[in-house]
Length: 92
Image (cartoon, rainbow, N blue to C red; front, side):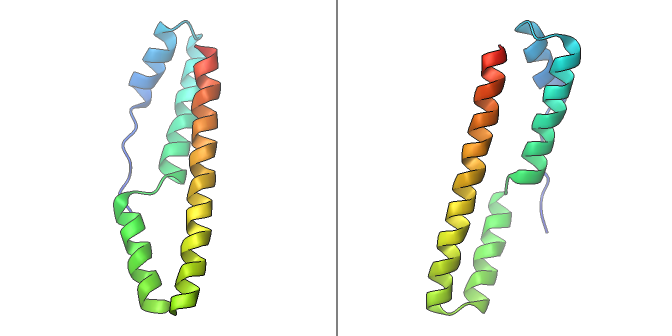
């Protein structure tokens, strides 16, 4: 079970427009950011469910390997998110 992360695309697009981004571009950026947030970011509940499942199914060695791989993936997702935000910030 996953809880949706709320992202206000209208407010985000308005901020972009106020900073001088053309309306059509601001709307596309807002939609892309919403997809990124909703599809790629995990909630605290998501992470807790993964931890619970890992503890129930994995041996101690498997658990360490899984934790490393998940940490590595979350780091990659964080880096990608920061890159998107940095790219958008350059437009402003």
